Every structure is written in C-alpha cells, then in structure tokens.
Image 1 (cartoon, rainbow, N blue to C red):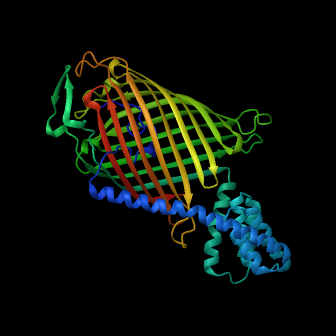
Image 2: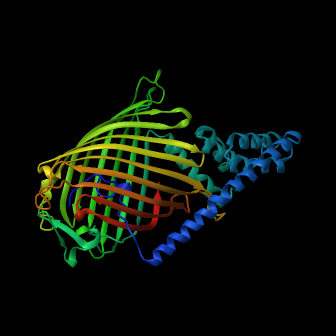
Image 3: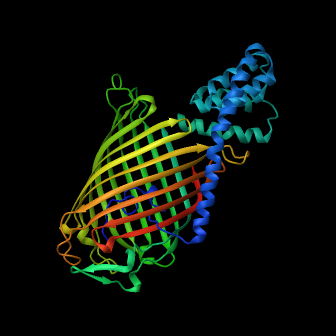
Length: 468
C-alpha cells in the first residue's frame, strides 16, 4: 500500500475520510441514488419559484407598510417575509416600528433579538433577549428558545472560541479492498491473474469521525488569534479487518494580521502538524510537519488562501504490511484554496495543489497535482418544524500521480502513473440546533499505467451528526 495524497487515501484531512473510496453498488443502491436525486431535483426546481413569490410579497408588503405604519399585523407579516428573503435589516425596521407604538410586546423583542443575532450584532441581540427573560411568568417554551441564543452569544463574545463536529454511521464500498479491475496484475513485467483472495470485493464498516477547533482571541487591535484543530477518524470493517483504521491529527499556530491598516483582512498563519495512523490494529505511519499560509479577501466576499507545508512521514512495518517502511520520507505540498459566495444560499469551494514525495525507496517517490471543486447549496427542509436549512453539496476531484522510477517487482520498465477521479454528492440535514443526519454518495475511479492499480469503487455513507 503506497500512501499517495489522493483525497480518499491519505491521512491529510479526516473530514474527507467517510466515503471517499467508491464504485458500483447493486440495483438496490442505484434505486436509493435515483430517489435522492429526484428529491433534490424537486426541491431545486421549486425553490426559485418560491423565492420569486416571496420577493413579490415582500415588495407588496413594503409598500403597504409605508401607507399604514401603525398596522401591527401588517408589520409582523412584513417582518416574517423579510426574514425569509434574508433582508434582516428590513425585518428589524418593521419590528422596531411596532415597539414604537407598543413597547410591551415581548414577542417583538424576542424576534428582534434573534434577527440581531443573525446579523452578528450580539450586544443588541443580548439586550433584547434579556428583556424577554426579565418579564414575569415567561413561558417555558420561550425560555427554551431564548437560552440557546444567549449561550451562543456568550461563546462568540468570549476570547475562547470552540466549535466541534462529530458523526457516527455506516459505510458500504463496492471495492473495499481496492482490488484491480478485471482481476489482472503485473509481476516482474508479466501479466497474470490474481488469486481470489485479492480480487475486488465489497464490504461495509462502522465509522466515527470528529473534530474540535479552538480559537484564542488575543483581544488586540490587530485581530490576531491562535488556532488549533484536532481531528480523529476510526473505522471497523466487517470483512477486511486488515483495513481497520485509526487516525488522529493536530495542527496549531497563530493567525496574524498583515498590515491591518493597509491590507484589511489579510492574515499570515504559520502552523505545526502532527499525526498518527494505525492500520489493521498496528502502527502504520506517524507525521511531524510544519507549514504556513496567507489568506486575503477578494471582491464580492470571497476568500483566497495560498500556502505550503512539509510533512516528515515515518512508516512502520508489520506482519500485514511488511514493506511499509519503504514509503518513509518527506512530503512537500503547495496549495491554494478559494471560497466564494455565489448567492446567500450557495458557496463555491475550489482547491488546487502540487505535491512532491521523496521516499527512502525511489519507486515510492512521486510528483502529484490535483484539484477539488464543490458547490454547497442551502435549501429549506420539507418539514416546517425544522428551523435550520439543509445543504446539498455536489463535488468532484482529480489527482494525477507520477512515480519517479519503476518498481522492478511489478515491472522493471514501466513507471507507475495514476489518475484518481472522485465525484459525488453530500447531504447535511440538521433536525435540531446541534443534531442532524449526514450522507454521502461517492464514485471513484483510478486509471493507471499498471493494471495492479486500476480500480473503481462506489461508496455510500450515512449516519447521525452532532455539532457545537
């Protein structure tokens, strides 16, 4: 097993672990995919019509409220529609006009607190929400609605910012052991049929993944912070237990403003990296590394980040993987990330990278380039009781890996050149402020100059999620 930096193989990013090895499931799974795709098409085709209707109603209510500023019912409806089209300033103006005529309406102060929270005006939000709780005989359901906002405001105003995400679930792969297509392999330059034990085969596993991001605010005029990210991922295979995985990684370093009076929003972040990786219950790889990146805002609300890092990777031999140490070496990566909000409900994410791996055995050394693209789209859930919006994210990636010398055991004349493709869709479906359900459908295919590494796979991943 050679540790490339392909998005579904290496330990570089645990958030991509669940479901990145995929090919073809049976008819039952294709029916699931068709049903999910149809549901998304219905949602996506009706959404623009609903948005147009909301915008029309918004304009009509706006004109009506200008002529009847003291009509509370009209102002309430205008504020409701303004919130739906995410014009929070207009909604706030309508509700504050109601308070001008009747300052005792607790419901109005509650809605104003929530709207100011959505705008990021936490001081104003806290002021309104605390006046709601100060009223006598506040109903339990109102307290239950207000308290999470006050807790979140306190967290966001703190110098210590903590966010966390976790998921547990099941994953099925049509080619879990990465068996080559067609059952052919090359040995010492000759083609042959591999034994049944090494042919492609399906399997499922249980998995758990999680991450915690901690940000310490130095509370200076520059806006400098210290950022730490801890990630973990574990799997338990049903059949191929030699592929049981346990991974942990930490990266930490400051994020420093660059000439904040001149280059607004520009930051520089040096960081350290460490991780450990077990495979089949045995130590497989450990990494120590460092890197640095520069981030800057772009016109119309985008962010671009350019960086480079070096990872010193040490592999360990085991009974299952007796030649792993030959991959030990230095991995250098240069990357660029770009995030751009195409609309209030759509975010484009792009990543490009170049990599160079120098191993102790030269046939494990390689050069690599790749890109990833995804489009996260928010939409209203089909159930009115669910307050948080759902997200569907189609994605695609391509990584090309060119090895420096042939492996004489496989073929003394042909160097290994791989191209890894991945495409799929991810669903994030919150059902509560902190809990939800996530799923991924992923197809992946590897073409190679050597038959041993030509694979394709289909993966389906699903399970409950939690975030803080």
